[in-house]
Image 1: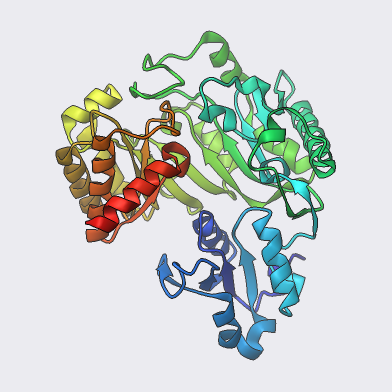
Image 2: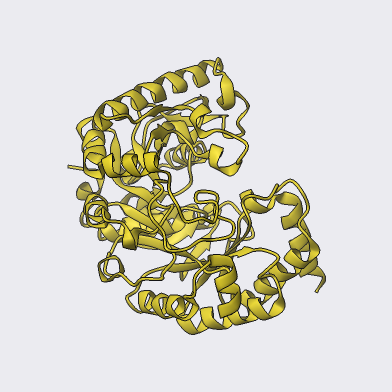
Length: 430
C-alpha cells in the first residue's frame, strides 16, 4: 500500500513550489484523485497571488492556516533536486511526517546532479542523462555521458543505470571528469539515496511535415538520414518501458516529453501512447493534423505548439508549408477538448514585426490560449545581445499577454540573462 492509499480519506494537498513543474504536479494529483488547496512558495513576488486559480502563500502563512489540521494534510514537493531535498527537510522539521509527503524520498547531503539522479534522454541511437549537447550545435552529443542503444534496448537501459550510479558516486566524491565536471547543474545539496527515474525525454527524430528555417535536425530539408531511419524503426518504446519497470527504477506517473518531429504522423503513435498512458505528458506538435486520441488523453500536462507567426505569408516563410489557418483551427479544437495548449513564438527577423505579433495574439485569444512561451532561434549565441527589433517584438508580445490575461514564459536558456534584463527594463520604463 502506498502513501496515497494510506491517506485515501484525505484528498487535500498543499503543493510546495509554484514554479516550472507546478503544472505537472497538478496533473499528478488529478491522476490520483487528489485536490490541491494552495501552493507554498518562498518567492515573495509569487506570494498572495494565484497560479492556475490556486492561491500561493508563504511558508510562514500556511502554518496558522493549517493549525491543528497539519497531521491530516498531504504535501507534494514540485521542484527538482537539490531544492526538493531542502523542502523535505523543512517539512520534517516543522512536524510533518514523511508519510504525509506524497513524493518523499530519503535524502543525503552530497554533490550530485538532478539529471544524473532522475532523468533519461532518449534518442534513436543513445540513452543519456541530459541533453545539454543539444543546446550547443558545436558539441557532439555522443561525447556526453550516456550509452549507445545498439540492438538490445534492455541491455542499454541496464548499462545506463550502472553508469548513473557510477557518475553519482564520482560526483559525491567530487572526482567526476569531462563535461560533468564543469556543468552548472553539479551542486552540493540534498539528493535521494536511491535512483527512481521520474523524467524521460524522447528526442527521436520522428517524421515532420514542416521545413522550419531554424530546424537543426533536418537543416530545413525535411529529410532524415537512412541510418537514423533504420534506428527509428528498430527502437521499441514497449521494450524500453518494460526494461525500466523490470528493474524497479521508474517512479509512479513519471514526466514524459515527446519532442522532435510530429507524433500525429508517426507510425508508432499508438505504441507510444499505449506506453505512456499513466505518465504526465508534454507533447510537442505542429498541430497541422488534429488527433482525436491525443485530444482525449487525460494525462497531458501540456501540448506545446510553435506557431512563430501571425500571418499566412510569414508562416509559410518560416515553416515551409501553407497551414496557418488549419493550425489555428486545430489549436481551437484541442482547447475545446480541454487540452492545456501552450503556444510558442520563436522570434526571428521575419516575424518580430508588430503586425505578426498582433495578429498572432488575436488568433491566440480567439482560440482560448492561456499561456505563451517566448523564445528565439536556438542556433543563435544566447550570450550575445539580440537585435533591438527582436527585443521590441518580445516586449510588445508581453504587453499584449498582460492586456489579455495570458500567462507568458520567457525561455532563459534561449535568450540569456542580459537580454531578459533588457526586456524587463523596457517593460518597466513604459
